[in-house]
Image (cartoon, rainbow, N blue to C red; front, side):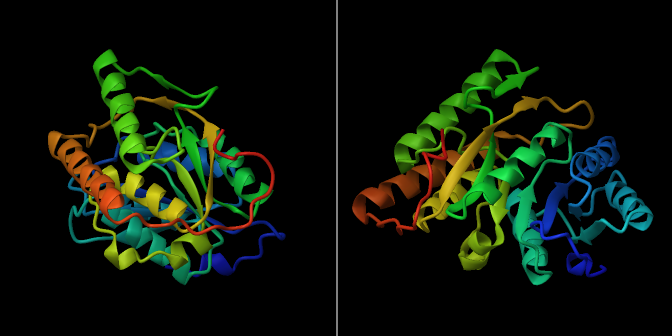
Length: 266
């Protein structure tokens, strides 16, 4: 993998978009093209878990055609959280300033990426910018009523149990300041499914960073199959419950950092 992080960036924040893949052959190329069209200065790291549909080979082809794209091949499917942690380590090792999480299936609008990056540039106290479905201007497109209800209920439960002042704690479209990830105990983060996002949100807040939410319209994938399952939902509910009860028994004071400006989570 070339050391693309050393490329001069005209004083802007060096950014790596980490995109985990498992059977995303039908959408990966379009997603990468959209990212690079929205913010040409960013780089993309595809983290492929040995997709049986040939996604890894497609990623290799994209990397061969564009030096802004690199690929991390892993030996098998190990869960979303571990894929992101592996990508975070690559980003930190290569000296990126900002690390973005983004799905490969086209559900996260690449057009919103400039706003997420701008949120981090606006205030050094903001450590995480989230592409939020549940702030004014955000929304869900193409989702059935049952899935909307499940998403909102899961968010409400996590917010209440963990006392988080974030509207979309399960959002998977987010940009981290590298300082946040560098200070977190990545070895201790073992959330495998989508509760990884909740875990990272609480850890970021507990470390004293502010979180900004910027509206996005989340769209259903147009190719491939959703990775959501009952096991993922059960893992999230169980872990959130344990974390919440632990907070009640052993409250952990959050670190205070200097803030600037108005409430960034609004």
